[in-house]
Image (cartoon, rainbow, N blue to C red; front, side, top):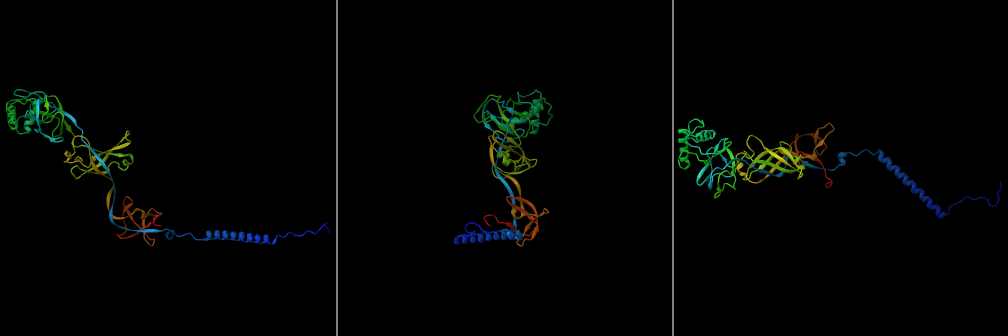
Length: 369
């Protein structure tokens, strides 16, 4: 077959260009081969042993204590209930009881014009002088006082007969006043119950003060002040009912209490935690008079959020739970040792099941790796 013109010739790249093409082909083949080899190696390579891939530190099991607490202030405060009025008139010449003192039948509360005003028990307040021939519930209250003090042996029949009058004279002699056989208005203050803890109004009953009678001056206190702990809402969650609280008494020593109840305070966004005694005695026991009657008293306290437990201690991070739910420690060789956890707090645990001195594996922190 013929064609017009010159015969067609194959196109041949220039010599320099041909060299670069071969270089490109070689590179592409190498890359493909590398990727293929990496993929095959990755798929066929066995999984790493986690026991050899992870770095560890080691903790020694040793004797110790585990527990946690919060240091807060407990507020101790008394509540006073008015129970009697002063009936004497004149100048207060002395005060016989300190605020918060426990008074009994015949205790001298104060003196007016050097004449004692004493405590007696009764529901009827003093409203008149009591002398020969008088009768009534208030007379019976005086008779019971005289009988308790050992001056009267007759019945508390509410009749001021010769025996009662003689007893009044004997009692007056013991107090240093004229023995006229009549209990003057103001000589006795009847309180609902005795013994009781009292607080005298210092604005009314104080040395040198003038009283005219009728002043509400005598208050009764409960057996114990109230004890509360103001806390943030987050702290309240750590203090459920029954949480132990150790209060440092004003003069030293420790008063034990427990959390009784919680009451949110919406205004301050806080919670008032009320404490209760651990037994029948008050929180402050026989030392409640250490708490001032007026104002609030702040007492350093320790709220025990986790009771202290003594035993063999190990960092909680060393404990491992197996697939079947068993708690174990792992030694340096990777062997598992079952243990029982008896307490945990603040990153430490008390355990049973291994000996003291056991070296337990603990995963290293990022800083330790």
